[in-house]
Length: 158
Image 1 (cartoon, rainbow, N blue to C red):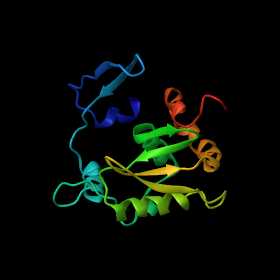
Image 2: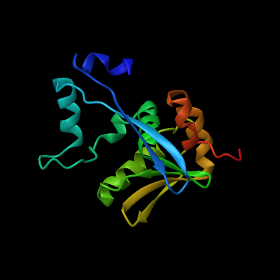
Image 3: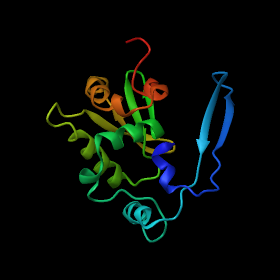
């Protein structure tokens, strides 16, 4: 939370909640907070939302998405699938998902090209990063992930 302290009002109260996942019988927790409205955030809002208030992928996403940003994306919208990884991109158009896929494929070009495909799910499109690319993903992003979120990139049978 210290990262966000400069952007929180003095009356800030952390809201946490827990819920039981009936499928797994595990209890999960989350926290919510709201930042102040500041010009430094307006810049990013204008990049990632169109005039109709719809979330978009900016055409220059390949210049914006960093390794750290990918780690945060995976912690938020990633899910381990077999030994690969799904990234939920349900709200985006097919062309936007293609742009994200190309960005991911070329992020680690100094190591290797990431192998990923687009899957059409009942909710929309999602990106699947193949098992053979997961070692590169783990090596590059694990340092930026919270220890409690590493399960999203590490199969239990490794």
